[in-house]
Length: 195
Image (cartoon, rainbow, N blue to C red):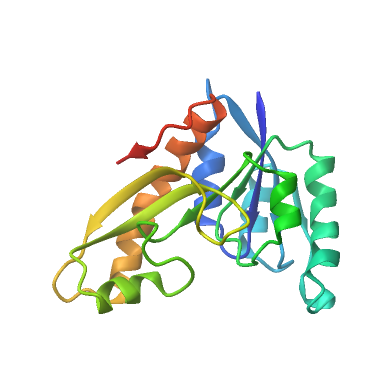
């Protein structure tokens, strides 16, 4: 049984989709929900499900990312996590941290990578006149939003879409895609899944 730590910064909707999927014959279980914000709403939601939680507030560390990550590492190692899932975790991780979990860390990004790494993905897709958008689950590497693609889901861009309406449509697909990819990944299957 694989042990999964999920890192969040906010409400944790993708975290809940992942955690709720890890039941029955699923080859993994959530062992830690970790946030860089002690006030993240997702921590309470995880605790209500009986999943251990921890928080390491990034703010006292200022620009010292290495010191922050050294503290972030402690609860992950204590939980003996096999797989790390970034689910709305809004801190850029250093190559040192990423390297510690090479081949074992996943992220979900709200665009069809390699298009639109970084922020404001939905507005960028609209500004470009794209007829479709979507989300990508990928392995995390030291280069932001650049690791091997493990899955993608597409949605159409509708007439009159705003960044908010498009984001809501993509988020529904994120909640389908990420759990499906995690299950396959935990079984050792890294072939890309396209929904």
